[in-house]
Length: 422
Image (cartoon, rainbow, N blue to C red):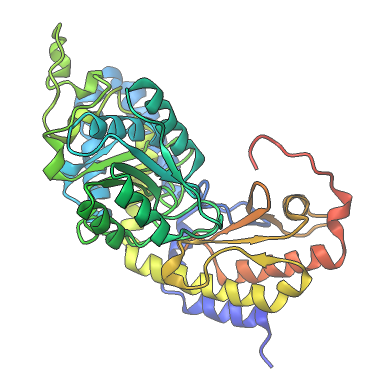
């Protein structure tokens, strides 16, 4: 009789993306299930950085701006555009997700195209809501409306639509929610918003690189997102902003930065905004972070987002079934949607001892595998599936360990103290 472990190993042998795992650095005796927070390091990132440090910054110094660096942001933006099915002149790479959300929201509010009402929901990433709250104190507008659902796992779409109907304006939603990985019906909501004089800014941070996103097919007009999760861009990798071509000309960025100038190196006394998406640029490009981002993005494009998404769905279904068979009887609960078309690429579980269970995974006794998930208050253990390097056997080992911790009450040996990053 074939064991569960052998089944996992057989599935890994059939995996058409298996070879991509060899493109990443893997610490010994560690199972990494936190790629939904920070992706693993691509092996080529080290060589790429060394080239920049030694040859470009080291030897060529400032000449490298003309010879190498000024072209980097647009080149990477064009690659992101391919991944998202957008036009290259609709995507800008740079700054952080929060800064890009601020610029885009402010620009839409002052454009006159939409009612000056900000709307978010209780599933949105908290820092996005901080930005909206801050803008509402800077402009003469009402405080954001937050659609509060009875569940913190899935959206109540009729309630959301009813809010849009009665309070049209500018919405910000996370395409994949950070707690449960709930995946919104992107196209239908975009269409509903348009019919009701509204626009949705989609935060793609927990989706890009793991979910197949077609900005044109879904009628998306505005989006932002980070690149250090499933795109494996590295810590602090620059974010991106997308604006549909039909809107760009009529929007003004609230930050009149150096690189958003039409001719930044003329050093003119007065500001003249650049044409197109470049008007949303601001500070000097983050060359070192852009370089590592390009390495991770190239791997994603080579693997193909449709194949990545297919593997994500298969791994997620496999993990879902294992959890139902092995863990639910031990007090664990599944917190993610079961339908693959309603969730992103992480599976969330919970237990009354969630935090102390995470400590057991991170600090195993004896010589056992270290397993790195992440914890989100107040009960969520997120198991991030990064299809480029996550294996079926990794998921099997994780479920076995989760089972063992509860059966042996290993969590009792850990306290409840939490570090800054969980």
